[in-house]
Image (tube, rainbow, N blue to C red; front, side, top):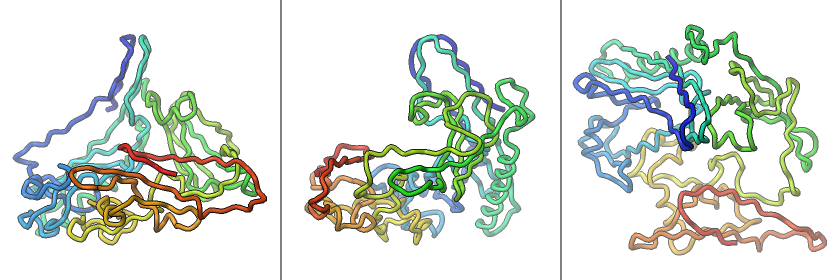
Amino acid sequence: MPSSSVLKGGQEGTWRPLEWLTSLNKPTFATWHYRSLGKGEPTAKDRARGRPLAFREAVLLSKEASSPEFVGEVDDKYQYSAEDKDIKVHGWISMAPPVGLWMITPSDESRIAVGLKFQEGEAWKKVFGPVFVHLNSAAPSSHSSSMIRALWNNVKDQMLEEVKSWPYNFISSQDYPSSNQRGSVSGQLLVHDRYVKGLQRANSAYVGLAAPGEVGLWQRESKGYQYWTQTDEKGYFNIENVRPGHYRSKIELASITYKPPRIGPTLWEIGIPDRSAAEFYIPDPYPTLMNKLYKGSELDKFRQYGLWSRYYELYPHKDLIYNVGANNYGDDWFYAQVTRSVGNGRYVGRYGLNLTMWSIPETIHFSWYWHRPLMQSCKFDLTI
């Protein structure tokens, strides 16, 4: 059943969502260990016997691990992260007996990414869920991998069924509209860039509906509901099962033409502005600090432990300097702007851009602007 949160009056402040915790019975579920990536997970005993690494979540598993596949492998919870939009099922399994407990979330319309801020006297209501709890079992087998695969395949099929069934029609709450009380929005997204000839079809762009407000508010506010989808190769999109309400989106049933803000033509850029670092240089992991799950995967290589130390090896005495016009960001720009160890527990970081190798005809005179979107978790210097 859904959980409905109501706030009336009260003082100004910040509200954070409640968490639903599931406690497993220790005698029965002591061996529950599995991740929704098709791979077994080391047990708590395996981690306790392992050698702690740079932070407490990362452990190098020892020869005493419960399975030979874990020996000499790094286990780190950050290696198993996924984007919220892709998480519709997660859970745990046990091999004795072979059973699984899973949480299926068919829709993320009510998920909250940030804390909620309220003004004094402001009334607010929101429905969280419903969440589908799935229990399954497999026939006992001497091969644990076959039992694991059976449980995982079963819950994946169930997840797909729940997604098709969303929104549920059996819930009798005026705050949870059924499918015949919801609508849909469809159209085509086009891009009109005055420095590119003709209209461009927005292939694989994200289109969303969010509560009205200032530009960018959807990234900082989660009081309302949000709906997202991706366009196809021709820019067409369709958002189904939208709750009644007012949303910020320039939606027309024919097409939307987006005109990106432009000061002038792009002269040079480092990377692709898609909120990913996949196009930059990602070093190979250390053979002795590897998670075998991602061995040989270029897509997931960034997840491997200790890649920041590769930066020290590449630039032992001075930091990276990128030469615009000569360097290639696929080979010469480190995928993460990490600091560099200088000993005695001290770390420094001073990245540089060299524009001396970038030239334009002397007959052209103009002003140019530099846009530098950077994401960081610590202080560092960028020198031009």
